Length: 405
Image 1 (cartoon, rainbow, N blue to C red):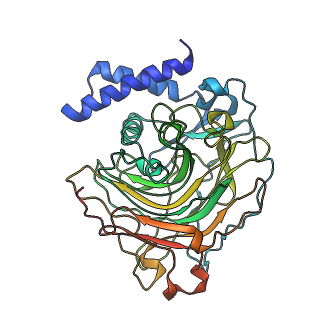
Image 2: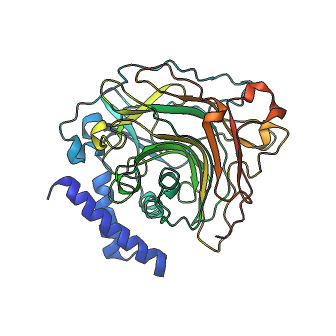
């Protein structure tokens, strides 16, 4: 049994144990804990150096060649790419008093890993449980909006997004950061998604912020998710399975986003940029002040999916809540019919890359199709005349929630 097969076996065992544990009791038995500990030992690689943050996270500096990504059978002989071959000419407004919104949160703790290593948030038992719960939920909205299938169960899922349904090689935007309150079985997030294919051939990558109680109570964190087969067997949240190659020495996936926006007050954003390298074909994730976080290697995908390019890009919010439990708020918790951008969640500075290695273009508003699955609880708008022309390339979304279906 190779290391990847061992990982799959441990994961399937862990999922079964988590389901049993969550259904019948609150604390795993010793045998179950041993299985989960084995999976944790597989995921958490030996650290050359570690840091403990004031928020309780442990950040490990891992040998870049020994990170979990390379346990994937498709990446055994992978050559690490430290930065994109060609960097698209985008502009991320990093001023503290931007006309188009707020400032970006930056690390102030001085944590950075030495040369030859990458920074990875150490996985805990709680992380593992919440990640498997998210995986079982499936993040189905991405699959739904890119698929013509009518047989996908979306019970409990609600989303408000703007979609670009043309072939492309990546997209970017600035995501307004909020911290909606959620119950233990709910999540609320904002993200950019790039996808191609449908059903079992659906392939997608997404990045943004998520609030999920297992993740440091109700705090917002940087997250990613990917799949290469319609969420069936491949893919995971952040770096909890082999696949995503981390290259940053100071920005880990799962990074705590602080401070966050306040209603009627100061606004904060995180810039997210995902695009396909025109030489290697890898899909890069760039965040914050042009920080190359890492990439999803081309070999993870097929030519009918993201191996060739994307057929859909979307920007917006999503929530999940068990049926019969009132759904949580999205974004600021207010509909986009506000008289100030400080009172409603937004995304701005959209760019799509229609050519490999291109500078990118701002998609005209008439090419973005807005969609809300439950408009009585969540809405999305492409423009807001009250805010002026500087907001012409933005969407406003969110709502108070309260749906029970």
